[in-house]
Amino acid sequence: MEEYLRSRVPWSTEPSLKQLTEEIGIDFDRFIYGMKYDKSDVELAGELGVTEKTIQHLRDHFMRKGLGSIMGQD
Image 1 (cartoon, rainbow, N blue to C red):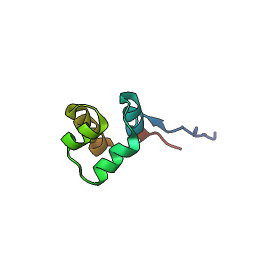
Image 2: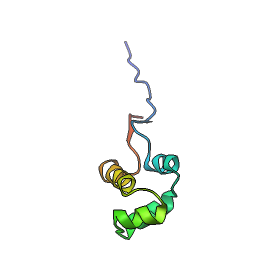
Image 3: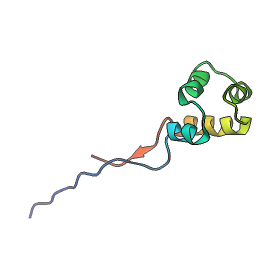
């Protein structure tokens, strides 16, 4: 008897960083640019018009999960 493995499409366990920034209403590219140039949470919050806590959350997400969290197999 032959067994066939089904192909499984990768799926996301959490929203991507881009989705999170869009939900909050900040520009993803500006956020990444600020991270690239090691701007502080206070600087980024001021530039993007959000709270420091929001930037801390986004930075933590990026450090722990990267740009997105994809799981599954082909």
